[in-house]
Image 1 (spheres, rainbow, N blue to C red):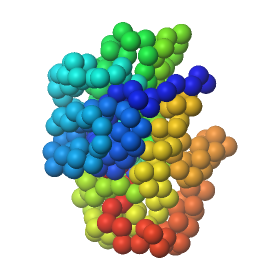
Image 2: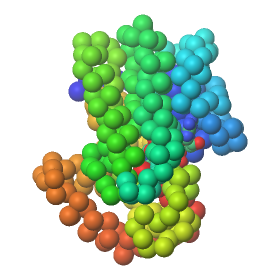
Image 3: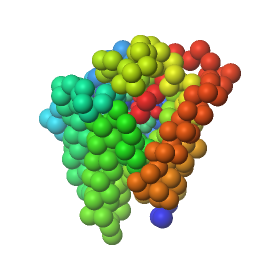
Image 4: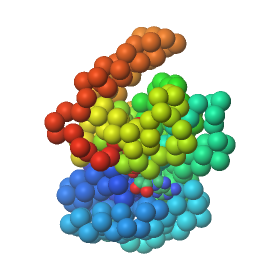
Length: 291
Ligand SMILES: NC(=O)c1ccc[n+]([C@@H]2O[C@H](COP(=O)([O-])OP(=O)(O)OC[C@H]3O[C@@H](n4cnc5c(N)ncnc54)[C@H](O)[C@@H]3O)[C@@H](O)[C@H]2O)c1
C-alpha cells in the first residue's frame, strides 16, 4: 500500500446532496480540499454547498449523462485551484424487489445510475488524473458488491459490476501515480431507502415504504460522518478496498469463509440487528439505508 495525501488537494464528489457524499464534502472541505460537488438534487446540493467553508464548485448533474460528466470534468479542470487528489463516484440509488416481481424500468434506472454513472464519471476524470500522474478514482460499491442478497438483484449486480470495473482499472494503472479504489459500505444511516424505488414489500410482510425506512434506520451501524472519515483515511492509507463499518467486516469474512452459504449466517445476523431495535441515538432517525 502506498500512502497518498488528498487533504489540501481538489476533490470531486457525486451524490453530494445527501448522505455519504455530503459528509465526504464537509469532511474534505474541513481538511482544506477545494470541493467540486454534483448531484441531481439541486436543493440538497445547495445545502451542502453552503455548509462548506473552503472553495466549492457545485453542479446540478445527472451521472447517467456522459456528456454532462465530460463537461463537468472540463469545468473542474479550469476551476481547480489544486491538482485533483480524488474523484468519488458516489451517487447511487436502491430498488427492493424479487427477480420474479422485478419492474424492468426500475432495474434499468438503478443500473444506469449505480454502474453507468460510475463508468461515466471515471471516463470523464481519468484523463486528467493520468495527465497529472496523480490521484485516485474512488468508486462506491457496497457490501452488496461482496455478497448476493435476496430482493437486491439489481443493486447487487450493479455493485458487483462497480467492483469488477474498478479492480480492472486498478490493474491497468499499475506503475503509475494514479489508482482506483473500491468502497464497500455496510449499512449507513442516510436517505437511500427513502429515495429508493419500492412497489411492494418484497418479503411479503406488508410493510409500507416508510416502515422499511424506519426498519433499516434501526439496523444501520454507521453514521455518514463516520463513513466519510473511514473513506478519507482509507484513501490516504493507500487501500485498494475500503470496508466501511463493522457489518462490512462481517460480510467480508463470511463471504471468504463460506462463499456459497454466507446468507445462512447473514440472515440470522440481520434478524438479530432487527430484534435489537434502534440505539437511543438512532431512535426517531428519519432516514435509513438499504444500500
Ligand atoms: N447507505 C448505505 O447503507 C449504503 C451502503 C452501501 C453503499 N451505499 C452507497 O453509497 C452511495 C451514497 O448513498 P447514500 O447512502 O449516501 O444515499 P443518499 O440517498 O443519502 O445519497 C445519494 C445521493 O445520490 C444522488 N443521486 C441519485 N441519483 C443521481 C443521479 N442520477 N445523478 C446524480 N446524483 C444522483 C441523490 O440525489 C443523493 O443525493 C451510493 O452509491 C449507495 O449505493 C450506501
